[in-house]
Length: 386
Image (cartoon, one colour):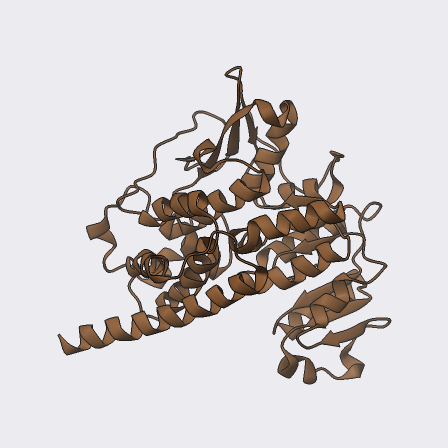
């Protein structure tokens, strides 16, 4: 379990705990949350824990490790963990581009991956999917939308699919116009109406960048043309996506907004067994609503659709630029509306390549991060001068 102390990690461990006859924890990984990781390892009887931040790992005393648990630390800790022979499946839930390394290592070792780290496919979709095909292992989606698509796709052959439609809640600012968002605070942007998520994903949901990244992920994960992917807002977050087939039939997957359901489906696929998630209350249902996204107020989604069409180095640049812009916004160094502007600037100024290597993509990632730091500093200096 990579990223076990995050929201997806905690939900995954809840699923595992509810299905002890089917699932067992072997190793857990975190970056700096040592206390939480040790508590998880003790509760779930993990054989190994991996801490990627060497300084945090050095603070752990051997006496603090649960009985029978060993510590891995440093930059290669994740690789060592996922490649162990005892590992049957890896859940990749480290947020951001940092999650790519563990996913890649797991696939190289021939391990199926439950993927919650969308950035892996946003940055390196063609290369990652080719590696999975070469190794003959599955990438099972854990994002609720991609899990819904994967489930609905079972209704017909892939060649009969004409369109997929990703749903999104619209975030905390659905229905607002740009002029109403000029003074948005981080506290306001973090208040998601239906999902409990970490700060980075919550901000991405508020800008609709999360939906943009999901479009790019879906393009590579399901091997579709970008023109086959659309987005619709659904504030109740009950229908998690649609798949349209050639005969006009549309299949949807619906359930209460609870990440444990797509997690369980990935971990137990193709089985469906009782688990910890609640079911729809059919007696209380009245109406579900849908509306088109406002691409002028939320240009991040328009950018995502463009990047899905372009491919190449665009995904790496968009993802890195957005990660840094979100960090700056959370620190109060960048305005909410400037997050998408920063991403647009990086895309417009990078050296595009349609067929990059993995090394090229990591170079683009580094360049885009530095570009946004420079862009933010220049912008702040201009504001101060005024």
